[in-house]
Length: 183
Ligand code: HEM
Image 1 (cartoon, rainbow, N blue to C red):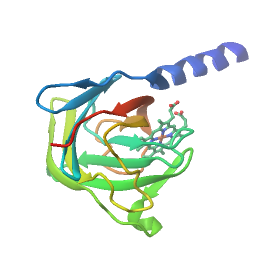
Image 2: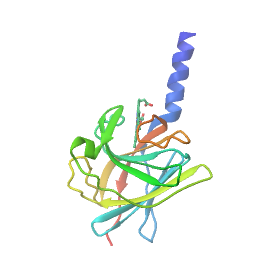
Image 3: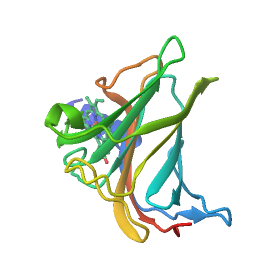
Image 4: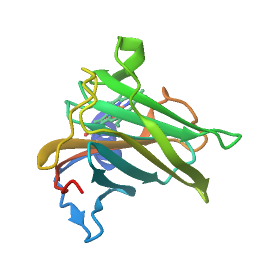
């Protein structure tokens, strides 16, 4: 019985948190690159020294993307966002302080370098667009440059989990190439 429980828990963890290895990035002629990971869609475009991201996940709670770092969340440059009950969008520029912990950059002495451009929560799906400088010069932000190969992680919380702290219901990682030409 004990072994069945252990195997079941390993199976469940594999279903809800896993490393997808190298992930193919699609780039359109309009200059947008995109990847999809277990229902989480991320696309980005670079304009001058700024990168704009659109992220979408199947939840009405928080959704997040992380760059670099590992194992799990350690030393990852994170962006966590949600649309609150009154429709107000919130975003946190975060950092993985350990494999299973994170904090806002500003709590660690760094800076908040994200600008929310658009956010919506409809039919169980949350979408948020934000921008940041490719290199914010904050020690808690990973410099993003065209041609950079980096670890991407994505995660999202349970429905209605409008916060920056609750556990994910799904978390995944992969390796991608930020292949996009500055326009
Ligand atoms: C908000 C509060 C969060 C809590 C309390 C939390 C907690 C944890 C815990 C306990 C684990 C290890 C167990 C497991 O693998 O499921 C884990 C793994 C992980 N977390 Fe989080 N996490 C949070 C947020 C985030 C965010 C914002 C991201 C990414 C942007 C993230 C990405 C990951 C990844 C990629 C893993 C490893 C999954 C894998 O690749 O196997 N987490 N987290």
